[in-house]
Image 1 (cartoon, rainbow, N blue to C red):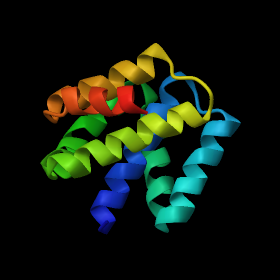
Image 2: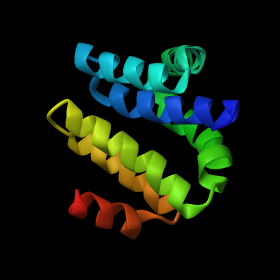
Image 3: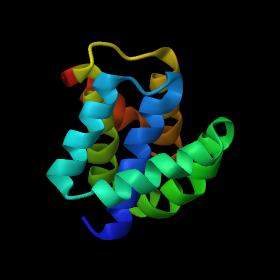
Image 4: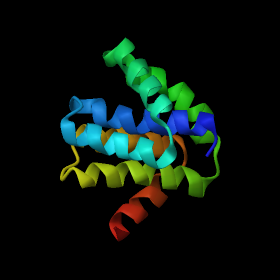
Length: 122
């Protein structure tokens, strides 16, 4: 994963977790992901990007996510988005807003049915 992919991936994860306000469990999961990817700088950037204007963060993120993750091959897009789905399950719940946001991105990226199939298998 190159630096731009790391940046987009950490933005994706952080953005979804911020939908209802970032709690301690979510922050821990984000830091674990950053540890695994050596992406603490990218996570810090993502959190600052979101904090600039929380209300418009999803819309502002779409262009960056579409230009980075959205241009990858289907298996990679599915892997990244499903990873976020799994991380949400780690915390014990998935809100409707989080699920809707992920499904909207999946639809934009042309992977909605593949993501849903993977979710059903899990």
